[in-house]
Image (cartoon, rainbow, N blue to C red; front, top):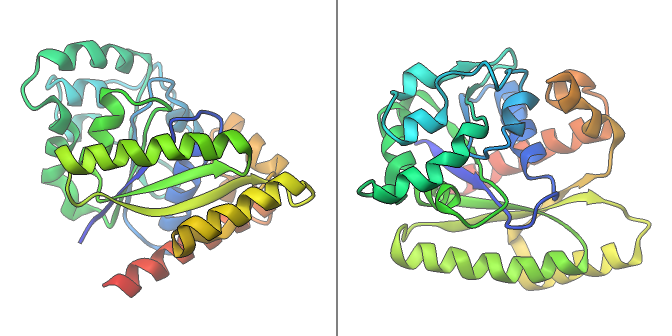
Length: 256
């Protein structure tokens, strides 16, 4: 059965897109069939996979508003997984979806015919609660929340959990929190350690054991259009995301 995972956080700059791209690449490396959906108008996941976003046509935008079929927009990357690309045109979908019936379910409907082709669908949601994010959350079975261990991140997490409850109550009753991922982790910071401990105390097993450290190679990889495992597989960032993929698979198998 295909697992659809939305990677989301209303706070920007927490490693959301980095996680979407690198988790997709690591799952593909392990042999899983993966689709990455770039649902962010910035298109950073698209460029991070080596796809030139201004040349990508059609994109997830045309799929959402019904101007293209999924198969017309899908792109195969050189890293073993497929991507539904995005570019700045996607920002217009927010307005156009308003007048479309069942606007919250457009992504779910677009993915339904092709789910048997994949083991995992990873959705990179924009850092905002808008119609695009709602589409991602409505299509997903579970949510992964990347976050930095800092004070404001805890505040934002409270808002996000409230949002997830609303989506679960009105649009997607099966939606659950898959896990919280600590990113850009600096063990030298006392505050980082304190916030990390609070996360584990409040969310328990939902906090992944894997921690993604601050890593220069991880930050450099997108500028080369590569996931970090293809850029420097021996870097701390690559090792961390491979560990995350393995931990997620172990959790999935345990639930089966």
